[in-house]
Structure formats: C-alpha cells, structure tokens
Length: 342
Ligand code: KG4
Ligand code: ZN
Image (cartoon, rainbow, N blue to C red; front, side, top):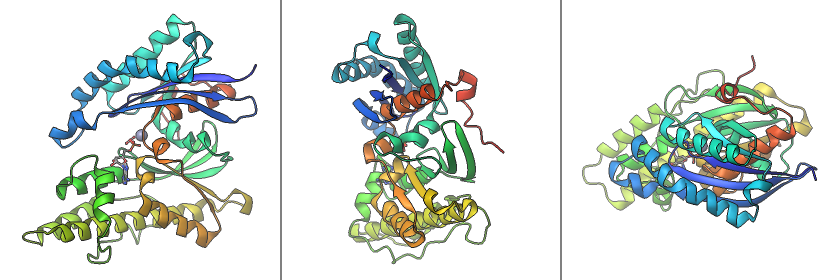
C-alpha cells in the first residue's frame, strides 16, 4: 500500500520524544504512538535547562523511549517507511544524540533518514489532528522561537515576523522565575494567574507604533520586574495579579502582531486560516485572545491539542511523512534553514 509509517525522534531541548505516525495515501494522519519523557525534574534545581544535563538525559532515555513508541504502535522497525529526526535548531548535544540514534536505526534497518528542521515540525503539527489546508498563517510561539510564517505548502514557508529579543515562552519562563513559581514556567504562570486581576498592573504594549509584525518581550519582562519589586512583601494575591497582568499583556501583544500579519497577507475569503503551534499555544488566555481576533475578522482558528503544541515526536514523524509524500526529503544542510523565500 502507499501508507507511510514514520518513526519521529525529537531531542532538541528538554523533552526526549519518539512517535510513530501513519500517513495514508489520502493524506490523512493516524498517530500510532507518541512517547514523551519530559526532563523538568532533571533541571529543576538549576532554574533553567542545562544543555549538558539535557544531552546526558537524552542518552539515558532515548533508547527506551523509542522502544516504547515502536511497541505501542505495534509496527516493527522493518515495517517502517523512514526514520525522521530533528536536525536543528536546538541544543546541539541533544540534537546529536537524537540524530545519531535515528541514523543508526535507519542504517541497521535499511531505511531512509529524514533530517528535519524543528520549526517545520511545529509548522505542520496542526495537520496531525485536523485537515488544515494550505495556505495558512502560522503563529509559532515556543520557548526558543516566536514567529509569524505564511505556510504556503510543504517546504514553502515565508517568514513575516520574528522576535527582536526574547521568545514568547522564554518571557513566561523568566516571569515564573522572577515570581518564584518554579518550572515549567508557562504552565506555572498560567496556574498562578487564575484568580489574579489582569487589570491591576498596566503593562506596556510592545512595538505598538511599529509597522510590520515583529515581536518584543523584553520590555514586558522589565515591567514585570518593576511591578514585583514595587511591592515589599508580596502576598499570594499580589503574585496572582502580576502573573495575570503579564499573561494578559503577552497575549494581547501576540494577538496585535498577528492581526498585522493578517493584514499583510490579506488572503481571499476561503483562505483565512490561522494555525497556532509551539508550547505557548497551550495557554488558555492566549488561545482566548486569538479566538476573539479570529472571530472579529472572520478567520478560522486551529490550535493543536496541548500535547502536540509542546515538543513531541509525532510532529517530527508527521513532517517527515509530509516531506516524503511531497517527494521533497531535505538534505542535512537544507533541514537547518527554514528558508524564508524572499
Ligand atoms: O514548543 P516547546 O515545547 O519547546 C520549544 O521548542 O521551545 O515550548 C516550550 C515553551 C516554554 O517556554 C514553556 O514555558 C511554554 O512553551 N509553555 C507555556 C505553556 N505551556 C508551555 N507558556 C504559557 N502557558 C502555557 N500553558
Ligand atoms: Zn519546539
């Protein structure tokens, strides 16, 4: 049959992940397994991801994570069509572990290896669970990246905007640290913001006067620090209010820049689709703000379920399958640049 069975390996940051997906000849997707070993505990004592520890943890856990992904899927190695792995960008130690392991499996079982750009995995992740048709506008908001991309097809990405300083997820992580909320930052800020008053602190609207759709989060970070240090002995309510005010301001910034990108590409009525991907897309306040934006402009909004928004193997396996189906498997070099075309 023309069904593709692809093993995907993801080790570019602090999640050790492997998955098997099936891409049917009609283009539909079936996720057969999706195993993720989150390393939060390994890094908790250090207040952030330590690259050396991440690489060691990937070494220790990747084999068993892949074995589980294969076992749960019930697809033996020799029935796979290909092995896909993140080739970058990311923490180089972790990327080496995943890519080398994937290479070894491909070699041992005589399978093609598909090296992939991590961002392409996020970019196509909505199509894991929904028939998101091309073209669409992609808001990619993760711990390392904040970008608006016009996705016109597999391998056809036009970058419209990016952050000029911190990434969106990074600003959540730094806010969590500042407020003493612990890791992982995004979910902790979201939890702390529940019951907080989002209008207590009037935080800035970054780049409000600037054309285009780039992002900036460092001003918000500074404003959060000022708010936090303005209170001598912050109560739980104070922390909740700061978290809620920050979350609101970050979500508003994301929505405002996304609106600019919508205007920039102004697609015909049938092609008004916004896809959100990356860990920050798991945030309900961000989702709500984007829902309102899309409703006001008659755009369709697609947000993958949280487990496919954060780093996972399924999105890498799927991007590999999409590349193979399109006859466009990248070389290692090509996989490293998510080439903005013009
Ligand atoms: O896509 P991802 O798993 O890894 C990267 O490629 O970076 O994104 C991780 C980022 C972290 O900064 C994390 O704090 C953030 O996504 N994040 C969230 C939430 N869940 C994860 N940010 C806000 N709210 C959340 N619920
Ligand atoms: Zn990611």
